[in-house]
Amino acid sequence: MILVGQYDSPYVRRVAVSLRVLGFEYRHDTRSVFADFDAMRKVNPLGRIPSLVLDGGETLIDSAAILDWLDETVGPERALLPRSGAERRRALRLIALATGAIDKAGAATYERVVRPAAARWPDWIERCRTQAAGAIEALGAEPWELGARLDEAQITVTCMIRYVRMADPDLLPAGRYTALDGLAERLEARPEFRATFPAEYAIPRSG
Ligand SMILES: N[C@@H](CCC(=O)N[C@@H](CS)C(=O)NCC(=O)O)C(=O)O
Image 1: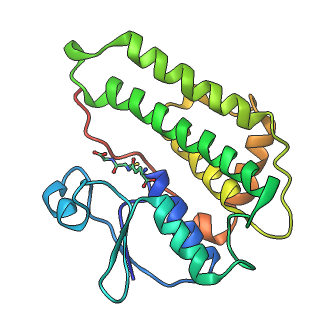
Image 2 (image 1 turned 60 degrees about the horizontal axis):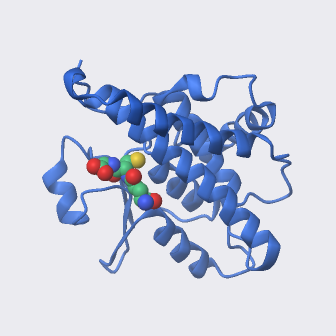
Image 3 (image 1 turned 180 degrees about the vertical axis):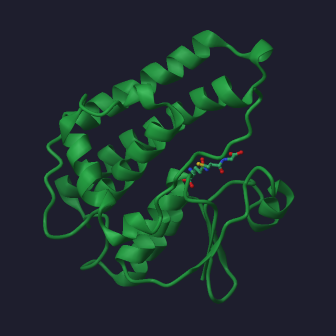
């Protein structure tokens, strides 16, 4: 199968890490969602990443839908999202906070960096950053103890931490939330995370 999208997208990265944790092999299509926009729209009409092209030719879009397929394929015993009950609700809440922080930190960054200076809207940037900071604070209050197996909340939150530290480091400086620092330190040392580590955030910059 082919994973489409670069690892500086935390959505692509959480899929890549999950594929590796579950033992799937994939080819990586590293075309850029910005520079190769027309080609990307042929893979996903929305022109977004990630997409996963399955061996039979079917294309899955959106990280949550791709992760759902991975969990279904490996079965309930190995699935990365807990199967039911309070554990599942907790994992979904943590994932919603992490993906929300990604979306809001990302929106503020696009506004600050991609949009030409004359067209920026400071109040909107501040609102988005406040929302991202609120989600990060809630995640920072969690214990983040690691059990025997990784789960999707741990994977997604670790991808969020790296992304925010590339896109808007003031939102998550080292030392502010020690439980998040510890989670990132332990997971980024694992082979699945090292193999997908994004060195930099490649977005168009208006200057
Ligand atoms: N809900 C989507 C979000 C994906 C997403 O936001 N991808 C970003 C990269 S991080 C993207 O493709 N941005 C380009 C654009 O939307 O124009 C998912 O979970 O896959």
